Image (cartoon, rainbow, N blue to C red; front, side, top):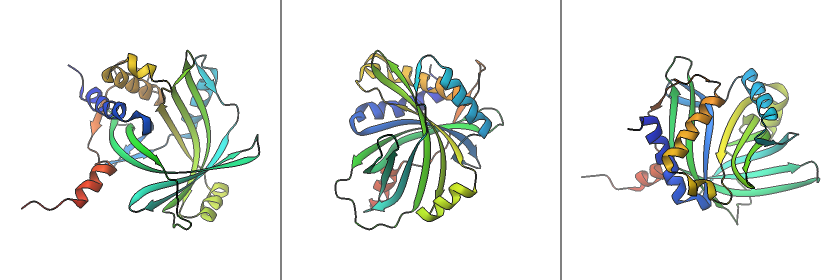
Length: 250
């Protein structure tokens, strides 16, 4: 019988499998404090992960940091993101607009008292071809990132992203924060599986077990008997949106 952790993660994987073409399956590392998941790790943990991934023979790592600027706002009550990516090598700027809706997610916390936790989420992403000319961002984020890719027989399967981030409610405020305050050190891992061969060869349960193992290693938990327990979570965006439009029961 599978553990509750494996069951919950495999449910997220199953939903992602059905809508992989326009979806994103992501692991995010953090803490579970006062009933809330907070992404981010300590500086020394972040630096150690960079060192470990640079020396990992199975990973292809970027040598330099790249910077992106994210504007988050709502378009017709749907979360929308405009991302500006700066390519310093080719001296150009790329802009993309998407709506992102969380379809399913679960949070698991370490069974000890260290508050370590991770979140597994599946979100659907839709390109926005006619973005608004003017918007009021709910928040703006600067991200300096390095990515490490797990490529198997030419297929990009997993992508690890380590980022230093600053957030504020405007561009001027976030640029000020970038120079004045320490960043949040974020660790993510995305199941990409570019050609689909990995998911074709593995069941949802097997992928869920792999996610649990990767999350454990990213959290620095190396013991074999580490246990992560599912915790109560908020309903995903899509379900919350549907419930808010439904009629009250009589």
